[in-house]
Image (cartoon, rainbow, N blue to C red; front, top):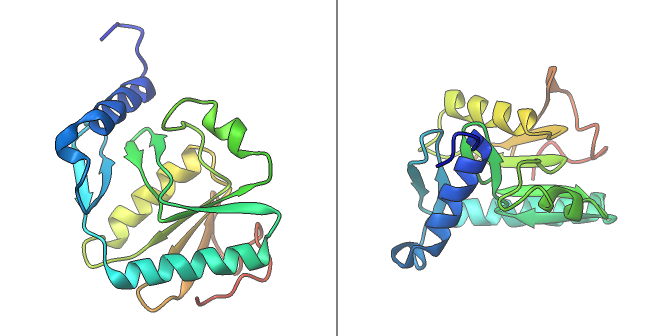
Amino acid sequence: MSATTTPAQEHQERWQELCRDPALQDLPYKIETNERGQVVLSPPKAAHSDLQGRILDALREARPEGRGLPEFPITTSGGVRVPKVVWIPEGRLEEITETSDPPTRAPDLCVEVMSESIDWSEMDEKRALYLEAGAEEVWVVDKDGAVRFFEKQGELEASELVPGFPERV
């Protein structure tokens, strides 16, 4: 790689390499990369899929003028991370995706779902990476559907980006 290649470009090149790898095409796992470009696999769980669907439904109801999307890759300083759900205001998707693929600009809202394989230390790291990449809010949903809302200054009582979003999905 050239000496002028940025870490973000290195993460994007690694991601594109993984996307082209035929051995990874049919894996039944969510793939992310860490800061060293190593592949991190997460097997899907039915409960996660259910929560993801409920989050998307509630977002579409609360903010129909935007777009709720599942599994959106984001190039961060810590590798390519893939939140379970993102929300993007109308017309903003083009602005975000013009930063290359996967984008280096996070959507306005990134939502993660806790699991047995992720502890709060790792979730705090993901939250910080999304906020650093430009997310306005990051939500963390526990296995029981309780939602915690965060911004750069810390935890919020409720979402400011999606007022009235339920505390439980």
